Length: 488
Image (cartoon, rainbow, N blue to C red):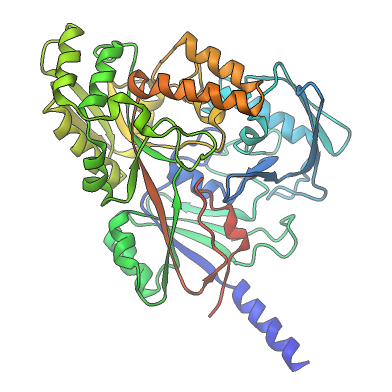
């Protein structure tokens, strides 16, 4: 009996604790169907769930749907919803909420960057009281992976940007912009016995040194993202564990392909030749990065080695020659919007500026705060921008929304009939054929596409040793915090 009492007391002690998390920037709104900034999606990944999820090994796994069937023609997906799932406001999850969530994402008034992921959906309809049926207009090999990005919200939801209401392990409590956001444990969470934590508190701490000292001093228990320099400093510190994973996100220079000078493919190719990605990795990532092709090396079944791309061999003289052949007057002047809330992005942009300015360009950097940067990004109000972009576990998930004509995050206004054809065919193809088609797509995009892919960094995080069960995901999702406990 004494042993049982002791174990019960230990469990209560662990459950009573709030995990203190230090992040570098405040969320930009909390609407899960609109948000794209890492600072926002990281928080929302603990509040909302989809019918499916992507685990830390990049596999599709059940989430709000505990099972599904697919018709022999690949056009009809029927999902069975988990019983007894409720939203944070107490409403029971039903098929109507799934139907409404899809409609909301696809509604032009929402302005969702996820809309194009569901362009292949012909209709969504209830299947009894506990099921939902998706009927597609064409087969889509990536459909189950794309569903993981569809946060299910209650039908009739309003003001999700300020009052999120999901089914996840933690529920919204309070948000003080630029200070903190607090979440409470969801006591009615469908996964019995989870979460163990009493809640999460995301402290907004822009200075990396302050975050580092807070972790080592015990003020914070988790730094979900670290730059390489801080990770190196924290390795070996007593009471601290540094975790690493291959990142799906990459640094980039994105360009507007409908206005000069980047409406000319030769100018886009010239910018690639102007850059030395090895030097960028050393200068901005402290060597903890790999040159980025259109797909992350974490996608081992799909990504081509960057040695296949001629423009990845730095050649300033060739860059100048391409610009002159394109009829450009040197230097080619370009203003690059820079996401100033991320120190890494600013560092990368400065190296790119120095390299490009030696190769026929004259780059000016317009460093912007996150809200303004995202506003200009969404509106296509840029000649070029420097940022971090997220990939996906399936090539179509990323290529479709980013590069396909009309893609929801194709802010570059890029359109290429050959690429559109490749992506359309790949969605319905067998795995071996898909690999061939995506290889062609990568070669097409690498040198004169609308994105100059720069680096895939190593994703680092750090936790106090009292934090048990945390696993770093390449997707940067923190849903895994439902499995975390803390010991005294």
